[in-house]
Image (cartoon, rainbow, N blue to C red; front, side):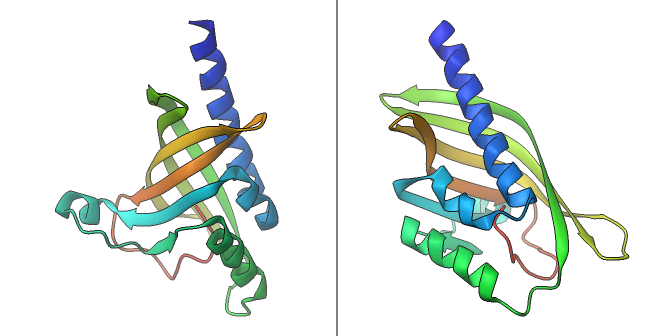
Length: 158
């Protein structure tokens, strides 16, 4: 029982640290939350419900995640904004050997300079988390949006 509580606390810390790095614009830290062999994707609930393997964003390796960070930093088309992430219900659904299957809900709010804050996207994370060395890392992170409609674009990771 104690091991489960510690694992839950570690998972919650992983989620919180990842969100804080993105909220603070520390995009270079983002890849460090992923295992060496990993995947990251963003899709919609509609695609999941229909069994469509369509992703709005898909990174099948840590190298692709690093490339995504470089693209964010080098893009001149991104209008300056602040995003804040709120996560809830972080939980371990199942433990298989060394993989924790985890779920959480999220909301991302966005504010452009001089404008009112709006809800950017909402959805849920469906993740596989593993231990690499002393730290937990995302082996697979799937962001499932509640809607297939995303305002503007997805310039930053969720």
